[in-house]
Length: 580
Image (cartoon, rainbow, N blue to C red; front, side, top):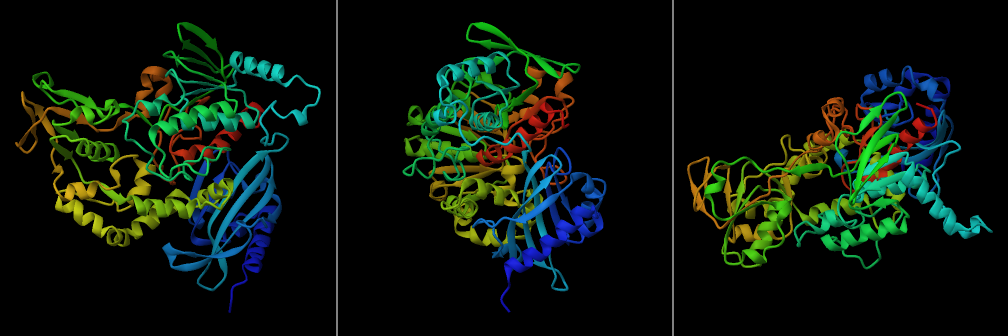
């Protein structure tokens, strides 16, 4: 018998509405499969939480369900969110997927559910996402502030806009440090949520953080995944965005979205927090002047990773050649005819090695200190296109993607490790031929989860495997540099290599420790881990409370800041309104 998605979804949703209306935590919990997941984005608490299993879900909602005041539960009948069947590969089964809306104590909510049959055939929830989407009476604006002449006839919009900019610059409610993609997307969201926000950027131009990276750099994920909030790429945009085009696009984005950004501006060390007024005392060095501001909140968007990390290898002064971190690599042309050793085996390392070969370096050797997870670009592209299809509205694609808890994604990824090894066999055979040591992550979780947990330990292959297989890129595995010599490096296994240059593609110091000098021990010691997954599978201290009042972190990829800028904005707006 064919499934009736609308009937199944309606039956489940009626039971959901009854349980929430009556504050019945037991009935609510019974709507889930025994190992089902609840992801709560600010409905039951002012935090981002994921709960797996009936016991944890019931414990979580037992004292919060009635207080959440969930009412007016309605199916979302829009095309992508109306009840429908879908094949769910990780469980090799057909599920019922649908969105729904509701009202709750603090505002308007959106939700998404995936149902599978329980042992008795009753459809119950594998995943439920509940999200506070807007605060009642303070809904996100859909038109740029003070730019719609039709909405304000008779007003001098230019003067009104200039007055608004002056107000933001002199009395920002939020100070965002860093005008990369995360800082700018958060600022754009805050602007639409009527949160006065000033962004500061230490470089002379917006986008310089990308312009200063190696010239051959392109984003490793597709343009749809990297679309900026409210602003699609042109239709003829390249699939994998080059460094300089991204830098220019960020600059254009800030202008089009009317963001208030100070370039050549840096927050000076040790801003102080006044708990009595809930404000920061911040000094900003803007060009050759110092400016004081007193924001209520600081959002650090200075990059998920911090400052470059170079291991302390003894006798560096003995080596006459060039030694640098990958951040300072300005292209391979200057290394033509030279012997280059690249320390590290991640994305930056393989990009640099490939560039060196193509530009005529005499010898290129990659030092792989530990096994690496390597996946083909086409595999990653196919996954991304399944999450962000071209024909889907971005807002809905992000919402449906967020409805998969990270913890569940990790479980599924580990369970499918054998299938991924098989799918990547041709690529991996080439890499093993050249001496590369491979893994699928510490637990077999694969590249996608490594991005969420470590932002390292992997690379995406876009042709370098062939260069490794034919020996154009030599690989030395399972060793690390022990000391420099007059001619190159000695390694921990006693072997040596002659070199004219050594490039450390060894990653970056953790964002938390990088900001210790800026914020001081007293502030940073209150902050737990930043980035990576916690025990529930949620991002640590990213777009959620950090441990220190008024201090927030915006980390991760374009999707993370595009989607979670909303939950961050809601938390800040709620505090502004006295709801927290």
